[in-house]
Image (cartoon, rainbow, N blue to C red; front, side):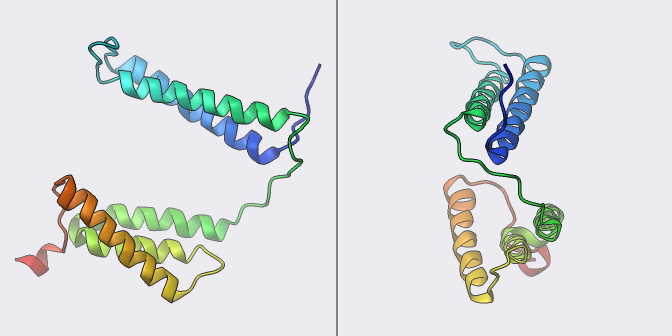
Length: 156
């Protein structure tokens, strides 16, 4: 008995979760010591997360095949938005060390906001200010991570 895919969005994301979860579990189990629940090794937690992601993906995938599932088709990919988002992440990763956390986050948020079809400067700048404040508070002051806040040429 074959089942028809009723919700293509759920089917694709469920498959993606299974793929990523399985990859994480296999890498964790093959490259790191697992240990036991009592004395966890470095691979234990990633293995468990991978298995949980696989289970979640299976649930979502099975829901896509359910007769009660809403019929949906995959929308066409918006390559322009995808390129803005991926580009912003690459820009952030290359800019973090030389420019510091504040300027890198500002660039990330502004460039990734260009992916939205509802882009406004006001919303983007408010979002950037809030995200920078939250990231500084959490990563720098609360967790004490050793990120440069500002570019080195401004602080020396």
